Every structure is written in structure tokens, then in C-alpha cells.
Length: 109
Image 1 (cartoon, rainbow, N blue to C red):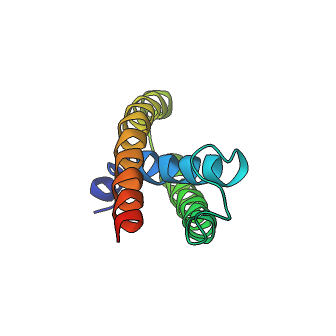
Image 2 (image 1 turned 120 degrees about the horizontal axis):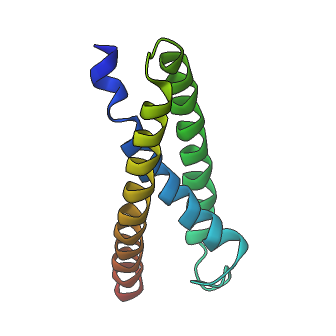
């Protein structure tokens, strides 16, 4: 059972890591919006980014516990890292597109 769940950890890292990254850039770098023009985006980014960080840390702790029992640690780490990086980049584009879609929807509403 644990082996099946462990296979989705890299995808969770990618999904929530990219969401946290985009929220962090929106909060700190102020590229996409001005806080005064979008009063809902800043708190959403703060909450979603914080929850993404908590989820990634929790999954990382579970992954470390399961890694202790793993026989081929180096291979598992490389495979996880590769899947995480690929998933991160793909999910970053997906989250960016979703952000633009929702932003345009809210502006037009």
C-alpha cells in the first residue's frame, strides 16, 4: 500500500511546489499584479502559498520515512528528482494559465 502512495510523491512535489513558487513570485516580486488593483489576489497567494509549503514539507517527511526502508536509495532519489523537476515545469505553465483565466474572468465580471 505504501509503495503505491509513494509513487505520487514526486507529482505532489511538482504540483504544490509550482503553486507555491507562483504564489511567492506574485507576493514578493509583484510582477503580475499590484496589490491595490487586485485586493483578493494577495491574500489568496499568501494562503495558497503557505498551504503548498505545508503540503510539500509533510510529503517530504513521509518520503524520508519511506526512504529509510528503501534498498536502492540513490536510484529512488534520482528518479524522484527527475519526475519532480519535469512535473514542476509542466505544472508551472498550467497554474499560470489558470491564474490568467481566473484573473480575466474576475476582471470581466
